Length: 214
Image (tube, rainbow, N blue to C red):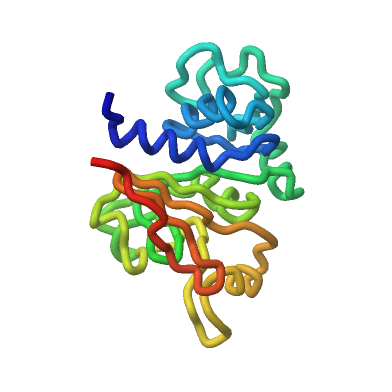
């Protein structure tokens, strides 16, 4: 049986989760990736959800959003969003999943505006916690469709930082994150409907790791 592109994205996302890790799961496909990882290679991972929920088992019912009631039933902790974000600030979250409208070669994500900030052609939903995850999680896995208008040389606005840009102070990459005061993390994988990319820590640029069959 052939996999669909979205099913392949779920499989690749699940592989980013290591056993025993605390994972900021997020919405949509990562919900399924977390359940798949728990049932296969990472039975001891913990899922954190922006609504203030922490789970050591996937929901027994299908979730459409992380705020659905079944995600609360059986949770090991239900609290406030700020308490979950505090876990990231303390360095207790090893992996976070996010998406975006645009991404560039350095893993910087835009979910704010398309076009000029003062006169945008499209106004997007905003960070929604993405900037916190991109700044504070131990590493970042990004999931989005592989479209020309989404994969950009440079995004119109950096909502969630990846590896920045080269400037007069030095290169992009992990050195840029240190220069701007981000204590850890950065993108480790970009998972699209076509391929999986990793990132060079020295220059911050995305590199093709694998492409999906078909």
